[in-house]
Length: 350
Image (cartoon, rainbow, N blue to C red; front, side, top):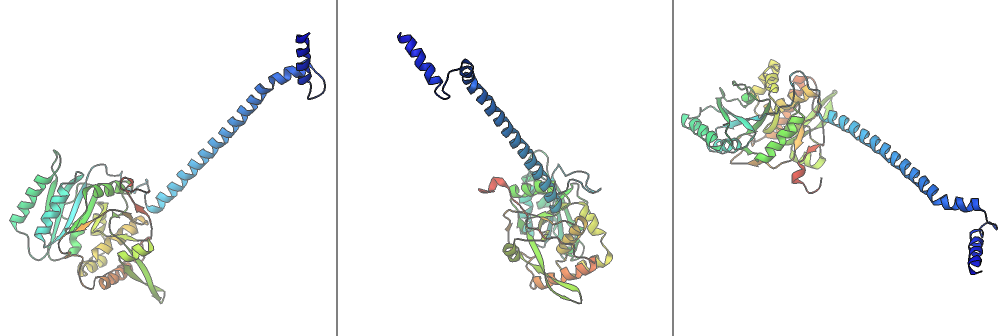
């Protein structure tokens, strides 16, 4: 009797929800957890599909924006005919020297120790020719400081006359696509230099350098704009730049050809105006690419006296150079940008 009583009690509890007991309902109730599990699995699968679709769409959007951004910055993989592919070798350091033998020795020794430097080319400017002893000593320094089994090539070229503008017209043509143009008193640490080279490889049409500058429009008269050459503090304040100076910058060697074949009026003007060659090169590259340069974050050091870039009245002279050269070019080709290449290895936050 006790077992029968228990069975009746259980049946009563099972039927408590609707008032009567049914074997079919009991069987359905036993199956219910399995059905719910299947429904939940389907819902989870649908949610996963939606997330996957959203992820694909997001990734596609990022790729699209990146391609547009790269094109805007001049990082375009479709190179013109003179660039078959980004340079995968090393680079040439083109040193512009101005009567500073001791500083030149330090500069050559430093750049000869950088592993990716294939050639050092010194362009000596000044009315007094260098001594044979100096040239011989520089050759010795390059041999001693060069890293690896392959020694760095060394070229010493005396520029006729007293024209800094000839720094971009070497008689011996560089054998590397990448040219690092630098003043003799400027030292860029080798890791920073190699990082800038890697940035240039992604944008071989652009000037890639460490010293940004910008310009502004002062006034317009008779629909003619007057431009002001702005220094570092304007770049720091606005976060915008339109040039990187050739005192520490990479560019493609073909720009040396383009520079040598600029119109005679531009060449004559640059030859007669001191320090205008750096603005002329920036205008030339911008005119060819239609894109801004690339500023690389990195420390650079100046040694000794800055005899090339510390002339009195430099701002006034460069304002004049900028406006006169724009008049010769017929357009204002400089493109403003606020992008900066930074090595993630040296940054805490990026």
